[in-house]
Each structure stands twice: as C-alpha cells, then as structure tokens.
Length: 201
Image 1 (cartoon, rainbow, N blue to C red):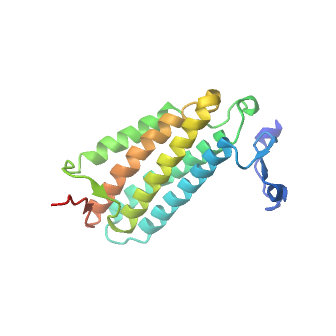
Image 2 (image 1 turned 180 degrees about the horizontal axis):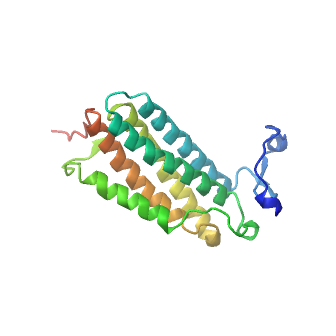
Image 3 (image 1 turned 135 degrees about the vertical axis):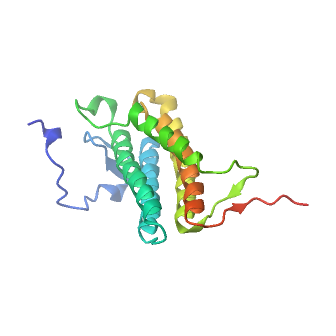
C-alpha cells in the first residue's frame, strides 16, 4: 500500500512547528504560515466552519422537515467538497498522487443545478438585499462573504502558481453564487424576512 493511501490517524494535535510561524504542507514541505497558499486554504477552512454553523442552525429549525432536509443534504455535500478544496490547496502539484480526491467539473455542475432549482422558487430581485433572513439565512450570507475572500486569495495564488488551482477557482466562484441563492431560499422557505437596502430619499 502506498504511504499516501494509509488512512489518516491524528495521534498528536500539537507539533510546535507553528511556534516559529511555519506549518507543513501535505507533502511534508515546511512553509511560512504567511504564504498565499496558507491564507487560501485557511480561508477555505473558515468557510467550511461557517457552513457548519449554518448547517447546525438548520438542524435546530423544526419548522419544516422537508426544507430542513433539503438544506442539510446540500450543505453536507458542500462541506465535504470544501474539505477536498482545502486538501488540494495544501498539496503542491508535485506531491499529488493518483486517485487523490480533487474538486472537479461535476462538483461545479451540481452547484449550478442547485442554483437553477432554488431560483425557480424565488421572486426576482428588484433591490439589493442586506445579509440576514433568520439564523440559517444569515449564516449562509456570512459564508458567502468568506467564500468570496477565499476566491480572491486563490486568484492571488493562481497569479504565480496557476498549476495549483485547477477547478478550485470556478468552484469557489459558483459556490459564492449558490450560497447567496440558498440564503435567500432558506429565508423564504422558513418565513423569515429579507432585509432590503433602503435608498436615501
């Protein structure tokens, strides 16, 4: 069995490598925590945590089991996708291995299908909306903003390490759109008001 195929076992949480501002990539290379690559997958990790918050609040919402289950199914998939995105960013191109799970065109197409399906239930926007829409919707809007930051950081990484990005950039771009639409859909499905931007009179 290839060493990279051995199931992951975390036996020790602290390594003390970070005490001097460094960390290890998946292939074992030690790098500064200030590198663009680390910023990128750190933001993806943060995004996954915010999606987890939205998923948790959705799990506590007993208003509509059908709505709850639909959101749960989508967010569970997204969290698993994001773990793959983070792992891909944490691995240098030369250290990837055959069979490594990476984001791909099918993941992007799934987001597009969801966006189209959810949009069918939503009225057209006539004004900009402000983040909100109940606990689930608000956390989805927060996830959207973190997603856009992660996307910007991946763009910076791609500017000098394009081979590191692959399908990550289009995936994050589509995910930001999806989180916006799902935030709106969750608010409407849970009978939560959307906050509209008010123009000065």
